[in-house]
Image (cartoon, rainbow, N blue to C red; front, side, top):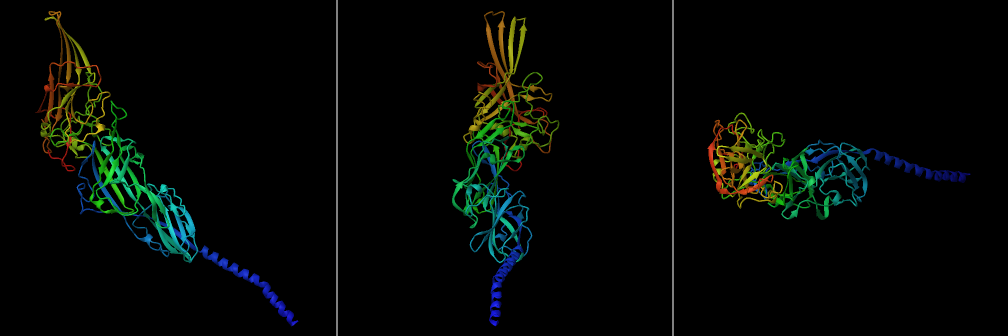
Length: 634
């Protein structure tokens, strides 16, 4: 009996043992679940490290005037000139992401810039013991997710983004190079050990590519961009736009870098709907520090622009400049380039000028004209010296009043003077151009050619003189003259200026200096001394067999000078330059073709200076201001 009790007692004990063991295991599991449930990680995105602009005040280059990189030097290329400046910004390193993450308290978001709320990033937690993924989540900026991880476990966390609404995938912990080509790669990493209860992770991204912001301004070329334009940046012969695979565990690029092809459509209008100022932002990997020195270049391959629409080219003349590399020399470039740096490259392109003979004066290629409704600048140069507005005056002659200016007036037909006002200075960029002096005109080399331009502006009359028995039939044609001075060897030529402006007229180019003559407009709006070609057919009754054809061409071109300009006094009789063509006998002048240019004998050309009332309107041809960006002297 006693033995039975002992056996029964032991049986009961051993029989309940499995139940006891199971109960202990369940209890442990419950405690573990409770521990996990109460080990939360709250995510807070602080932003991206801010840039701090580098001050190179003590190391100014010839292309800058002061610490804000105001450009002063103009570099000439084939067909256009460039005024450049460079701003360089460094990432502000707060060092938070290189340390073990603070998980006890939050800290304020300072020295960072915010991301757009459409941006997404990926946050991954690796167990440091074996690099296996414990959590992987795609997060939208503005969201504040809670992530549950095991307490007491050490983790390496990694966050990355391309600063867009999509996040590239990873394969074996690597982002493919095509997914980050020309992207703003953002990266952050750190280590943490989860504690029981609430934990906090504050993320500050670093930029892992070098950013190039290219701003191109062609307002000084009086045109808009065409999509054929291609832009790139190079360091000597090395293309700076590259991409490579990125290993998120090591935080390094790997494999052989590949060049990125940048399309012209990457240039976006700075102001919506206005296409004469565009900007593009490029991103490139930097695997090691490299000095750009004086080899950094902005390449146009090509530069394609569309000129202002006008009568001859209603949709705008396409002008294309072949491959051109603009030097970006700057003292700041002697500092090695580092990952995360931002270069802001500003290139202001302006129409190149022309020199003639041995003189140093640089002339604009066409006359100053006024376009009141042009939103980018009313003071502009003609598309071509051969351009003319095809409108008729009261007598039926072609009349162009947009480039005939009164003296010292802010608009061509201004009713009052503004002392010292020089309209050339208002051409973009301000102060690059000025009115020519009397000496500038005097230093023009001997005339190369003079052309007659016929636009079929005919007036026909019939005269009869019965006393002497002479019947005289004549035609008068209002024409234009073009005085040509061939460019000097020091002037840059370009095929873009060799394309004829007038259809089927090979002479209507603009690589040389052309000064058109259309007379001047008197205050009563009449055009005076406009070149006129007269053809006379004379038949004499006294000489039945006599037949005489006589052609004559007379007319003047008028241009204001700066000789009398003054900020202190009103100039009532300013000085002008005029050239005159006067020939009583011309043979073989073809009047049949519209816009036809004919070369004339130059021995009937003369020029001189005189004065006239400021209320009369004349042409203006601007010249470069050698004191730019300062005000010119006269």
